[in-house]
Image 1 (tube, rainbow over the protein chains, first blue to last red):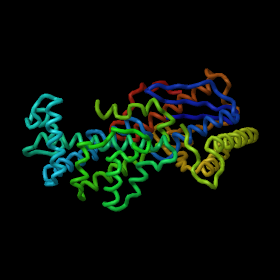
Image 2: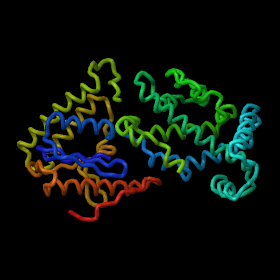
Image 3: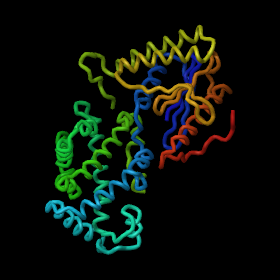
Image 4: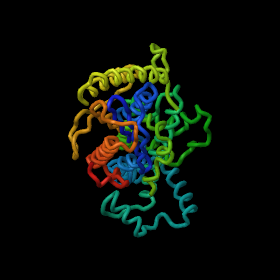
Length: 246
Length: 134
């Protein structure tokens, strides 16, 4: 947040960042103090939410509507799909996750039961599919965010969220997401080994209307954010996900 | 890092646009301060200059003016920027001046009220709110 006060002779600036207020000496109104005012307006005054952890947490965090709907959709789709590629990715993930975590992902612990109650309601949940759905949901969000950040800092590129928003048909959206999953935007910047062969890209193989609706919803929500806030407040943008994983 | 203005019909870079607009804005504010009798006179001049800047920079500044919130009406709100106007010759060059301090407290209160009214999950303010009314 940025506050500005003026009586025509002086400009007073006040900013709230990292849970602290910072105010400075009053500045005489001149082209330099006016320039500071305009940069603040340019970066923070435009339509759109700032890319800051608390906003992302509110929109995409565990208790958000999108997260609940998203995890449920992905859970139902991984349970239902007979797409061989999606199944291979899921089984591969089960092996890797079991090795990394050292426990049986098929075992429904109390914590997983609570997670299942929260996301998919009562019934007999499948813990491995549920965890895979949760991981996939956050993986999609993180990929979209990463692509948006790198496209913003390269002015010659179309901003990723804008590009995805322009994909108005299901087929086109799938192609754009496929390009993202194949590291399209990152390869253009010579960033390699970032996304290739990601197991969480299974949703493209199982692509259908519910998955399309979910990804479109996530993209539309991200489109409510103002990317210019990345540059205005790099300290805040450095760990955008901190409230999502805390 | 700041983007460059994208349109080829605009030869100015964004830095140039901001710099030139700032000079114009400063002139408008100074001129208004010389004749204005109220904060409203000043506000009208500044709002118009900011609109010109937005047009020149090809951005959408969504300004809300005098919207009622819990503790009153912020003069103008543009996204995350709150602007308060005071009658000419109210503020002083000293940070500790009473009018300056009152303005800062007012801006803080506006901010807390706006945060509260957003009602968005996860946006609760963690900083201490000012308790003294000024």
